Image 1 (tube, rainbow, N blue to C red):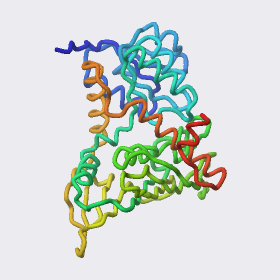
Image 2: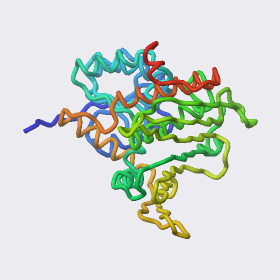
Image 3: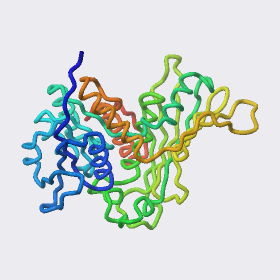
Image 4: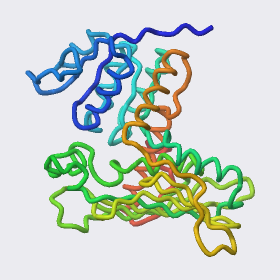
Amino acid sequence: MVSTVSIDRILIVGLGSIGQRHLRLARLLHPNADIRILRHQAGSPVPNTANGVFSRIEDACAFAPQVAAIASPATCHIATAQDLANTGTHLLIEKPLSDSLDGVTSLLQTCKERGTVLMTGFNLRFLPSLQRFRELLSEGVIGRVLSIRCEVGQYLPAWRPDSDYRLGVSARRELGGGAVLELSHELDYLRWIFGDVDWVKATLCRQSRLEIDVEDSAHLILGFAPKTDGNQLIGTVNMDFIRHDSTRLCTAIGESGSLRWNGVTGSVSLYEAGAKAWRDLFSQQPQRDDSYLAEWKNFIDCVNEHTAPAITGEDGLKVLEIIKAIRASASSGDQVAIAKLQQVT
């Protein structure tokens, strides 16, 4: 029988909108725990649901948290995570794992040596609608998948209307912003459903008048690892910060029909060969906290059971390798193979 760990010391790194969500959920799941915040601003007030605030990583490590949720800008993730990993802290790191590959493999190795959990926060995998989409595809509801169309977009100033979008992480290169990093959920769930990405062809651009120094649009072609029959699945992905009709869709086109996931409405629809309309197979409107709560529960279960989380650090690394290839392709104008970049990393 596996012994459970009493979680009584929790650290939340960063207190932006996602950090506040992690704090709220940590308190919900562990009402009696000592929960501290790590923020870089000295003298920051203590939130009502926290027990204290640190401004130095040394003090946070001395607190010896059993688990930590890292929700600071992506550019800060790895350095903070490495310091905490050295103390044996189990880590839930918000997506993306980082803004580059620097230091990622060393972090993963430390966690492996210490026997600690490292989970990457791609919470969309916990949406029941996306899980059902994946199940139906594996059940062959549309036969062999021939092509994928994926798109995600929302007008950046409308994401958090109570704050200045120009000051947020999404808008600033120095903090790991831009459509590709901020919307990297798509890259993760496409890998999860359709397998590893073999190569990419990408165009990144800033089309709008938004006051940002990062791309507001990304147009990607992905080649997935060939199947045993030698056929290679090709998918297109469009990401943006500019559309006013918030959209998150993935359509798989198969030999006997098409299957569509709508992440905004939480529905999965089928268009069968010979049909005249789409037919809903599943519908569950997503609530904002639900997937994060399921993510936290999986994380804590893995800490207690000494098992791998649903989304591992290696999954986060794979997405960063795809992003590196996307940037290389956008810069050169060429198709870029993931394996080739891995060889020179």
